[in-house]
Image 1 (cartoon, helix red, strand yellow):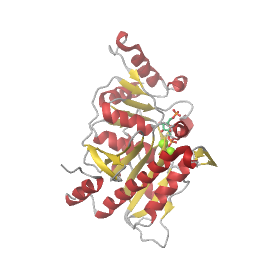
Image 2 (image 1 turned 90 degrees about the vertical axis):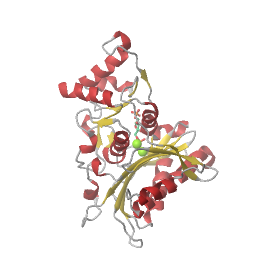
Image 3 (image 1 turned 180 degrees about the vertical axis):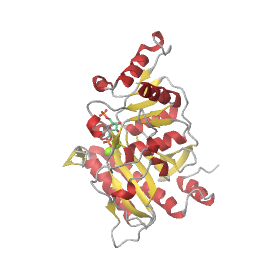
Length: 332
Ligand SMILES: O=P(O)(O)OC[C@H]1O[C@](O)(COP(=O)(O)O)[C@@H](O)[C@@H]1O
Ligand SMILES: [Mg+2]
Ligand SMILES: [Mg+2]
């Protein structure tokens, strides 16, 4: 039985009119770029790609060499194809226009070229997150064009660079997982229609921020830690990889709740994680897999973005737990 590659899945999706040729090509090109990033990461210290780049990004964060390398790989791969109007990235202050010498397309591509940067030098799983929008008719592909609610996304996905390299994708027809077959060099469909169980016994949050959390999160996590002796009547386990892609992939695989809530440390910035290329693509994937995603107070995909690098609180995963955390916020 021949295995379904990403290319075949996309061609069939085009035949069924779920995507057009340009969007199919765009996703193929992003997947190819993720393959190249996976190879760079795999070389690690052998090719000197570990460590600091010696520069800061627009967020004021010290960039890792691989943040910059991954960003370059995605830009170079996507510039010339004729399918894009512009790109935006965590590692670039402003949108990247398509050079004049190349034809332009109708799509806008946003990405976090390397997610989980603090884990690169310790060889823990990291990833790439991407989101696709259409450039509004008649609008120049400036920052304004990117400021669309997450419900407008046409595709979203992430690559996970771990013991094996995965590509998880949604084009609005469920969520599917492809594994990179390094010998053949292609992504092969290994899990179809991933579903997140509505209930879970597992949560993920950076506990070291506890003293900065708002009361609803203090209450919610406090109840989890009381386990079966408390109001929840069952024990909960905790995980925190500190790579959003890895924590979200665990939830897509076996359920769970991921939280990076608003806290007094990040309140001024509006949160830690970025709306356009972290929260929105992950929220679309989670909702397409039967989960839920809120800021604690509002559905993330309904948010109207106001800035390219806007940050938001994130609570996502198993539906019943997201609803409980959100209810605690709305009660308070
Ligand atoms: O260091 P903390 O507070 O645990 O935060 C970890 C979070 O920060 C991130 O690393 C931010 O993403 P980047 O690495 O792309 O900047 C997330 O992947 C992760 O969930
Ligand atoms: Mg990130
Ligand atoms: Mg990043």
